[in-house]
Image (cartoon, rainbow, N blue to C red; front, side):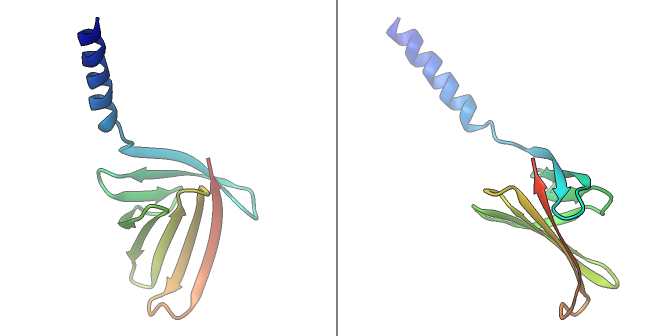
Length: 109
């Protein structure tokens, strides 16, 4: 009986150590205008996609944040997802990063 228990415990611990999220799908609600967008975070492809916006590459994953961004011909697009608060900030800056064109904040569930 003891050997069976140890084997079952080993299997549970072994499979749980490899059961992390590869893709996360959430719904994010704009804080001011109350519209919703789906948010996809794909850790295998290192891609973040919010609603109608283009996919952007995840640049950095920290304990509390996930940062993603892309450079277009006319602007720089940045995303910062706060993992503890489930808050996503989407910012569009000018090509030289001196002026903010637009910033939106979303609550995600």
